[in-house]
Image 1 (tube, rainbow, N blue to C red):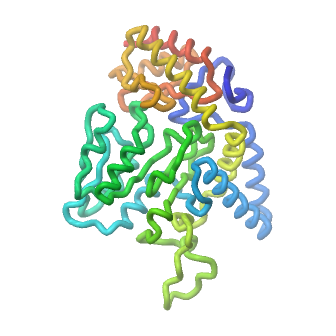
Image 2 (cartoon, rainbow, N blue to C red; image 1 turned 60 degrees about the horizontal axis):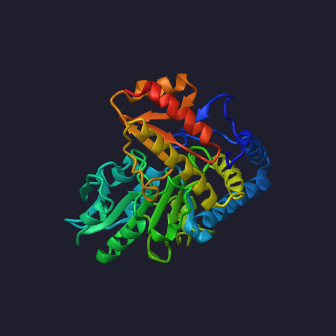
Image 3 (tube, rainbow, N blue to C red; image 1 turned 180 degrees about the vertical axis):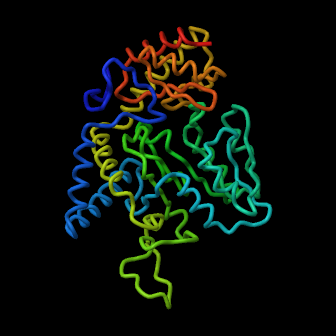
Length: 366
C-alpha cells in the first residue's frame, strides 16, 4: 500500500505517476497555502509580519528535516544561484581545482566552469563508488556532488567524500535535490548544501534551500549582497553594515514568499512521516523494479545495490523519448531527457505501480 494517501495529491485517475525526479504532483493543501499568501500579501504590515513568520517556520522545518541549526538555513531562487554565490566568494589561486563527476548536474558545475580564470575541473569517470575521492589532490579546493545523480540514480558516499575533502583542506558542497524528501539527511557533513524544492520535498519552483555550515566555515562571506543580506537596521554606508549572522545572508532580496508558503505546507505534510519509513517504502519499490527489469533483460544504469541508489531507476536508450511517450500512452508517467527514461518513486506509489511500469516497459523497450 502507499505510505502517502494518493488522495492528498492532484494525481489524475488511472495514472501511474513515477516522475518525482522531474516534478511531483501538487498537494491539495497547497491551494489553501497559496490563498493564505494572497490574503497576507494584501494585508499591509500585519500581512508582511505573517510572511516573515512563514519564512521562519519554514527554516525551522528544514532544519529539523536536515538535522542542522535553524540559523544555518537560508533561501535562494534555485540551486545554480546558491552555487554561484559560493563560487564567487572563494579566493581562487592559480592551479586550484574542483572535483566533480562526469555526469554531475550542470547547476553544480557551471558556476565554477564559467569563472575567469576558471579552476581546473578534475572529472571522475566510470562507475566505481570511490571515483570522486580518487581524483582529489593537494590542489583541490572543493568537491561538488549531488547526493543522488539526476542522470543515473546513483547515490554517492558522502562520508567518504567528507574524509577526502578533510585530508586536503577542501570544501564539500552537496546538492540534495534528488534526495531531500525521502532520504534521511545529515546536512552537517557538508560545508555548503542546496536543494530544489519541487521534487520529493513536494514544493514548487521559485525557491531553493541554501545551507551554510557555520560551525565548519564560521568566517564565510558572500562576495556580493542585497538589502536582505545585511543585519537589521542597516543604514548609511560610511561604514559597510554588517552582514546577517545566519544563512539568510544568501538571500539578497525578498525571498519568494508564495513558494515558501507552499514549501511550508509541504514540510508540514512530510513531518507526519518518519523519513526512515519513507526511505524504506521507496527502497522496496526501486529494488523490486530493478529486479523486475533485470528479469526482463532490460538493463539499467542505476546500481542495483540499495545502498548505492536513491528513488530513481534509469534506463538509457537512444529511443528514450519514444519510450517515454509510449509509456504515457499506457498510463505510466515517467521522465525523459539526456538519453534515458527515469522512473522516480515517492511514497504515494505502491507495488501495483511497479507492476504496471514493468509491463509498460516490456511493451515499449527498444
